[in-house]
Amino acid sequence: MKAVARFCSLLCSVVAAVTLGCESQPTSDSSTNPSAPQLLFNKAHGATNPCAADRDHDRGNAPVITLCAVAVPGSPLVSVAKTWTDPETDAEYVDDQSNKGVDIIDGRSYTFVGRVPGFVGAAVGGSGGTISYGGGTSTSNGQGPNSLVPGNDGHRLWVSDGNSMVQVVDVWSQSIVASVNTAITACDGGTSTTHYCGRVNEMTYDPEDDIVLVENPNPLDETFCTTSGNNCKSTAAISYPTASPQKTVAPYATFISGHWPYKILGTLSFPDAKGTTEAPVWDRETRRFLLPVPTCSGTTGATACASNGATEYIAVINPRKMTVEKKFTIPDCATLMPGISPAGTGMMNDLAIDDRDQTVIMEVCGKGELVFSARTGAVVNVVTQISSTDESSFNSADGNFYVVATAPGGATPGNANTTSLGVIDGKTGLWIENVLNVGGKTPSALTQSDRIFTAVTVPATPTGTDSTACSKFGIKAFTGCITVFEHENPAL
Image 1 (tube, rainbow, N blue to C red):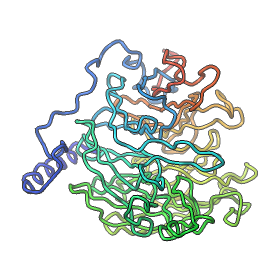
Image 2: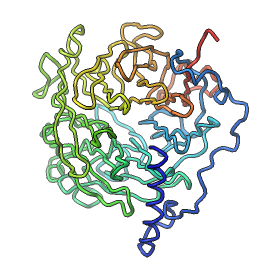
Image 3: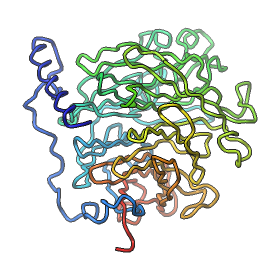
Image 4: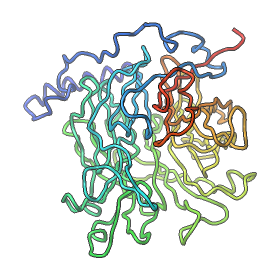
């Protein structure tokens, strides 16, 4: 956000605090205390640390290398949902399901500085295809934290959790200061044993209107699930309405006001979805949300896709009217990737946007990345040099998209059994390079330093030698880490 916009936002917040001074607000929320200190991270800033060395990270056209890794205390990083950087705090935030919290990494000293606790955690147990999730209810309502976005005040995060909850996090106090319940009556009976709306997943933020958009991708029909003889489990993998033996409610999105008391402004249902809706983005040029919706995503059963593969569209959403204004129809997998047979049936995944060039990247068909126009939905390029991934990120400092996935077909420097950081030009959508990042996932870019972060996870039951990207940096085996990348000119 521009400095003027940030100043105006803070000024409005102060005025609102004075105007609403008699309103009951959470006393632990630093946003209500303008004199609260700025977030100060690790005092070791400037200490000897390979991450803190200023090498060539200002050379955005130089190749990308792995610079260093940051250790994360607590339980090993087995399940990490997402990472996100915030230029206002120079911080990297990690949705750490293994430790039931949001980890904070100082982007200046490159050290772990704290964890926000209180989330439901990762999937636990499970056998024979049945997975039990955390969440504190007898009906299992999904894992968390799952996704996050910073607010516009420099110290607040919006974080999605299990049990249909969105948690408001204050990074100054490193605590949850408010919770917003996004459950609706179609999937929630209001008792401890009738919660079936599932987790809240991906999200984005409209700073112009101060609106948070969150996804509720896996709700189940509460009446069906509480009927004798029916046994429902709300998981992260329910894909199709009326799928037997469970009956689902259509995925929906929830609009939340960014102002206390964080009122739910409305919801938007996607009854034509045949799969899990995925991560939306906010387009500041058009002032619209873009949200991907699958219309076919499967390989078996009555809902299987045709031979031409998976299909989907991008919903263009007006945040004030909370309506879909138009749809960008995405070509099917056979059209997108004519050289790959059989056509991919994997669902699309999360979006990232290049605001400057008005391009968006989306993982498609389980086999590559699609770059399309944010204005029209037209295909810019299809990348097959690196496979589909779960998350993506745009770095405005160098103009590149970043993904982490397997490099298909033994592409250098990895093979089909390893993961690499893929670098893709934001303007043209052309693939640039893959950088080996074994165990890596969920990239995010910190624009001030022009560096990229990825979370490196480890198996729940490790065997043999730790060969992840953490291993060469002296980090304890099979604990996971955060890897840091920068541009490095080998000729200098």
